[in-house]
Length: 173
Image (cartoon, rainbow, N blue to C red):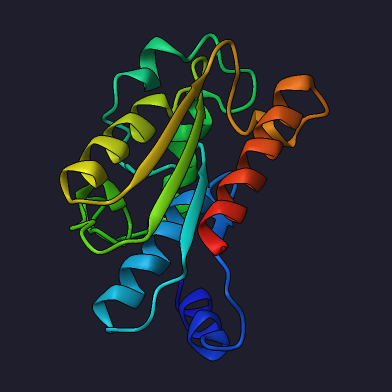
């Protein structure tokens, strides 16, 4: 996260851009935005979050209810991976689990998530909290799609990429 924060600071004023990540990096994008906000640095114009992992404790109900439907991210992996990232840090620290952060002041967000993925609850709770904090959020739940389906050569993946492009173009004009 510190590398992402420093990179953003070094680029500010040079380019107009947004932040976007996939896989476990949606949480990293949010943590970077929160860190920049805490340091009173300029924020990017937007954030695109694909299936963001925002709760390292895994308390969302979709961890269980979608475990058999998500072919990409398993329940076992979702329990093991956080330990690799957070080690002895508090899993409720806002930079570890952005679901617990003060999201006010963050840029407009586009959040995509599949209806069949175990991180569905993470995305839905993030969107609710961001909207409650006054953040403009465009949220789309994709039917019968799994974690980071946007990276696959399927019609829904292409449609999602097109929608991401439209969102970015709209917010960078």
